Image (cartoon, rainbow, N blue to C red):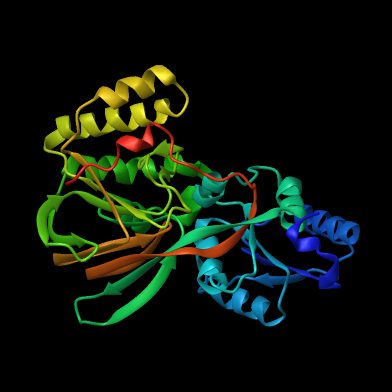
Length: 343
C-alpha cells in the first residue's frame, strides 16, 4: 500500500500543474482518470501554467484544496516553480517530465518517456525527501530577491545557455539547441573575477569562466558534471570551470567524458580515481556558498534565466520537498568519494 492510499485518509484527490505548451493532454487525462478510479480518489483537479508564470500561481491554487499529491507536467522550470510553493508542506510532488533536460526526474529515477508509469507513481508511489536549494540574489541597484531551485544555479556558460537558447529551438532540437551557445562561449573564453567563501569561511578570490552550484550532478545531454552531488545529502556541490585557452577546454571535456563513462565502466572509474586533480575543473562542497562579482553576471536556476546579479548567496534546505518515486536511497559511489578537491 502506498503512502498516498492510507485508508484513514478518506477520499483524496490529486492535482496536476501542467505546462499547456508541452503537455499532451489527450494522452494524460485518460490515464489520470483511470488511476483515480482504480484507487478510489475524487476527480483530479487541473491547473494550467501561464506564459508569465512557470507554475507558482498554479501550485498556490492547487495547494488551497489540500491535494494528496501534485503532479508536475512540464520541464525543469515548471518543477522548480512548483517546488518553490510545495516545499515544507509535506504534500508530495510527482514528476511527469516533458522538458528538454528533465534533470531532476533523471536524478530521482522517475520514469522517462512513459506517461502511464509517471501517473502510476503519483497515485501509488512511495515518497522520498529531497533537498531544495535557495538562491538569494542581489543586482547592481542593491535590490534583493530569493528563489528556490532543485537542480543547479549557474553563472557563466550555464546562464548564457539559458538566456540565449530559445524555447522553439529546445522543442525541436532538444539538447542540441545548446551547441551554438556552448561553442560561442568556449571560443571567446572570457573569464570573470569573483570573491567567494564556503560556509562562512575565509574569502577567496579567483577567475572563472563558469560557476555552478549543484543540488544534482547531471547536465543536459546526460553529461555528469558533479559526481559527488547527491540530492538528499543536505549539501551543495560547487564546481568552477577555469580553463586556460582551448587546451584547458579540451582537458575539461576529457574529464567530463571520463566521469560519464565511469558511471558504466569499472575500468574508467579506476582510471579516473588515479587521475590528478584538474586545476581547470575545481570542486568544493558545503552548506552555503556566497560570491561577489566585479561586474554584473547572468544567473540561471534550473535552466531559466534570472537576469544579472552582482552578489549571490546559495544555501540548502535538507529534505524540504517530498517527491513520489522510487524508494531506494541514493548513496555516493566509490567514484564520488574522491570529490571534492579544493579550488
